[in-house]
Amino acid sequence: MARLVVMGGGVSGHTAATFAKKWLGNDHEVVVVTPNSNWNWIPSNIWVGVGQMKKEDVVFPLAPVYAKAGIDYRQAKAVSIHPEGKEGSDKPFITIEYTGQGKEGQTEELEYDYLINATGPKLNFDATPGLGDGNGQLGPHTVSVCTADHAVHASSELKKVFEKAKTEKQKIVVGTGHGMCTCQGAAFEYIFNIEHEARKAGVRDNLDIQWISNESFLGDFGIGGLHIKRGGYAASSKLFAESLFVERGVNWTIGAHVKKVEEGRLEYIQLDGTEGEMEFDFAMLIPPFAGVGLKAYGKDGSDITDTIFAPNGFLKVDADYTPKPYEEWKASDWPRTYQNPTYKNIFACGIAFAPPHLISKPMSAPDGTPINPTPPRTGMPSGIIGKTVAKSIVDLIKHGEGAKLHEASMAEMGAACVASAGKGFKDGTAAALTVYPVVPDFEKYPGIGRDLDYTFGEIGLAGHWIKHILHYMFIYKAQLKPGWTLIPE
Image 1 (cartoon, one colour):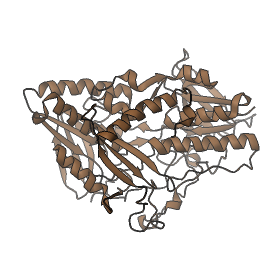
Image 2: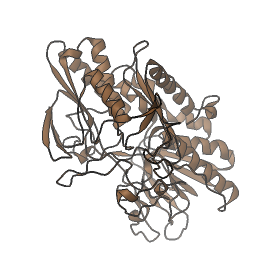
Image 3: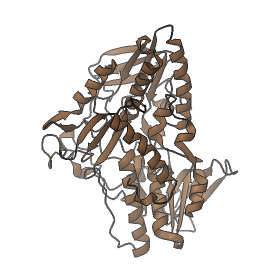
């Protein structure tokens, strides 16, 4: 009997674990190690953050789902990987520390035959002074929608601002809180949902809503922007995004790195060296992501973290990490199987794998401060990669080390994104976009890097209803209800 251990129970890890267990049956073990007791459909946190959904609408308990599936669930955080075993045993294992199940603080060595790192990101709030509290958590000056609990807090604070806006002007700032953030999409959705709710509440005229982002142009989204087919022409996402900002009366500051956050104000520097500050009564700034801080040790106890992990803490996989100028980056640099090159029984999926380089063009301020979005690996690609990695491991278990690994390169993968711009039965709007491939391939598609036949977008009420339906569909799928395997990633 082989044992697959999955570290992380988010979109990618949950997908990998549930499919692996379905395909392996009771002949082999699947263990999920995650510090969370609940699964969270993160794309809908923005609706919690404006009071249009409750926390209970976006989470559900993991224990009964894993019990039904026959998956061994450990509510714990992974601390270290020991891929060579230890003195007296060649069996690889991970060290975990329990965060629940009545074992809080207890540690355990958990052996594995195959390991998937799906730990996702560390929300690195402390990378920006004042954005964090100095202990790795969200600081007191801003709010967040990165977790369901954060979103509940954000909604509460937003209500206070709306109440004040009935009689006095209020300033709202939303965007990225560091020059190397990803996930501009979540901030994009949140700012337009705030604007939408403000109009519904009759307080829009008393709100100054400002966008601040590390993107060099609106609509970059960490993928270097895109062109979409509209009326027989290729329209840039820059035009698409700018039109929406202008239409909604939202001002923007881009190419910006937030240097510091204090009570009611932030300081920033831009790509051209311009420094400035913004005052605010309410701010939601996405933090940069980093690896969760896993360590790795050799059989003799030596630290081999740098062998397995990139400097940012994400797991090295079958990508080309050779340093090279931006002009030499290729779509083929991106990983295909997500297998660690040193330890072949270790894989990564979702945000946990180390990308070979940025997708957007690297840029920096005159003083050397990097200001460029880092690559997104969330949503649809995350689920696809998780399922692909699970398929590879199942074949390795069933057919031996000679089994061919399955592939899911982001440079050969399309993705759909539905970005909410306001929730409402009749007045909701969302931008529905498809992009193919996610990582542009300028050799195959000269000029724009993508296939215009499969890259398109529209905004309107229909997009809102698609996002609304997807919310329920993916929670249904994650709960492993009848027919869950038929719902695509």
